Length: 349
Ligand code: FES
Image 1 (cartoon, rainbow, N blue to C red):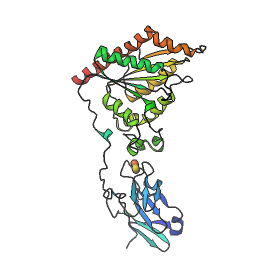
Image 2: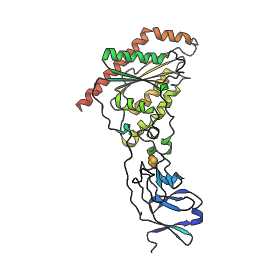
Image 3: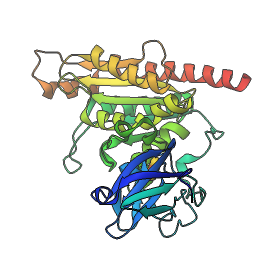
Image 4: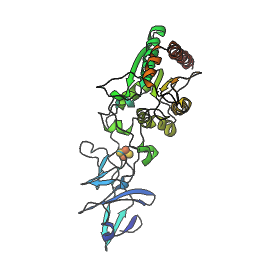
């Protein structure tokens, strides 16, 4: 035996103090583990999207990836039961004179066994059919004690107009009816840890943000987002959704892949207080960064203003204001005109 391809990792006693660590040995990332009875060394890059396995944790004999919890045996590199063929390379270790040595050449090779694909992982194709308008209401209310939402009422009106005047298919998603988790900051671990579909969506089949992704990415040609103004900002549900849409924006950053392509957006913003332009500005910037196109005059807004405290009159005003109703319909007209132009140019290209 020569030391040519073996590397001294250090004193065994010191290496037993930490269950799992990420090392770089001869330019190779290694996840070195000690499970209390045995050392193990496997490649430090996860088969999923390259998470640093040595920065995860040990669960019995398995190394758990810190990004999305995939597991690999800490000695053999094989995937967890059911995914044994999905393996990362393993490395031979030897104990010599109180030191642990690692052989540079891997004992086994990497093999990626495809995991079941999430339905949202399909190709971006628009199914044939009439133009489609999606409304997303971000209004919060107690379902047992329903109330009139001015932004939602205008969204409803806009959808009715899209159907009756333009023959569009229409859908309304009310975020408050969906049970979905807050963004858990996968991007904050690493850009590649924020995946499409969203890491939460892949791990939790009960998470209903999948409905937003499905309709926004695969179904809609036009997306109308409605929000109340809450202390000068959009609703908390709007921001909860927006954080979960980082998965859409991150595909542009990482893969130059625009999931919201040739789609048009419009906004409905209403509130008791002012700050309409600031709310619209934030939303326009955000959805613009996701790839939505906006027509001229891209939002309809209504506000009672800073000093008006008579919100009980606000409902009646929105209910009966024909000017406002007309603006909601005209917003749809402008969005659909732009959507038709985009579709026509996409067909020509
Ligand atoms: S589970 Fe390892 S990168 Fe996703």
